[in-house]
Image 1 (tube, protein in one colour):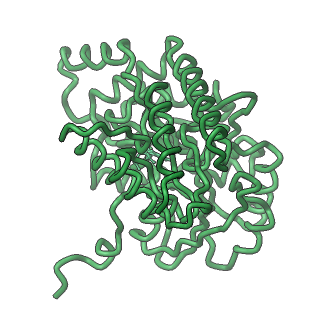
Image 2 (image 1 turned 120 degrees about the horizontal axis):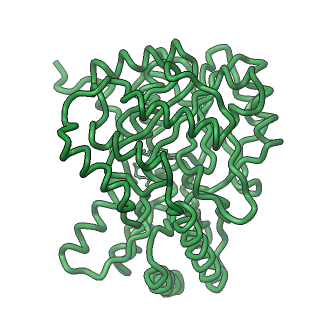
Length: 388
Ligand code: PMP
Ligand code: GLU
């Protein structure tokens, strides 16, 4: 008999996590590594959030909580949806989980039956595919056009819908391309989803990190029909620099959210009690933190783009999130080889586009300091110009 269950055997390791860990290890070994691999803000969690956690700990808030989250946190999430997105949810339509990744995992397991088709626009965040595989569904990768910042459009969507299509995964602002969908673009997509009764999973984890005049719009806000079909996922990881605290949340159809709660009851139970109190403080007032971080990211983005322009490389201009998706097709090597060599020769860590479904690109995170960006891009210039 096989030692490992087949559905687990097929799961690939997370390249984003693996390369980030490799860069960290090289740094610990004393090497002068610059990491543009990380998918997390490099800011400390604000003190008022830490204080709330310390208070919770001191007060002995260290026991099981309701599995789907404490009522006051659900209320704060309800309020956040109302204020930020004009979305109305009852507390029963909301569930708090151990990070947005967990929320996404849960709802995919809840919705996707064996062989059900899930539409995933490419390039995509690494974990969607594996989550669908684990559910034994069929991931259908939608090829998008770099000239449209890799955004999905109505034509590509319509062409790929079959009788088995159950779910579309949308991610705006997106990882890795940094694209932000406009209202008209979402409208076109929503119309098709409503017509075909497709569920939509809208991953809005980068909502707060958006640049220039771009605006975040949740597809769920467009009309009541699409609201009913959409599950919105968000969390505190990126907006409040709380990646390690592991708090994410999901909102949508009550019956599916209740099913998610049952799944959570038998897997993780509640997300960490102390983290929930910290997330409650975060959502209650951001104390100006988000805007400061956003402005800093915008400056770093601008620096990275101007350095890339000087080198003469093409990229997708990020409108949100904190990644630059860089076109390496001129280098005439695959993205894994590019990343392996760049790290081994120049000590700079970046993520191969192949991990996101596009081998002609690599992902540079600008969650790094301005001097690191300068230095890392100087190393890129040397790397690109050295003969191979
Ligand atoms: N969605 C996307 C697109 C992401 O990049 C991440 C980052 N890991 C997540 C979801 C998960 O975030 P969290 O840390 O809340 O699990
Ligand atoms: N989402 C981040 C990334 O894309 C963090 C790592 C992960 O969870 O995949 O790098």
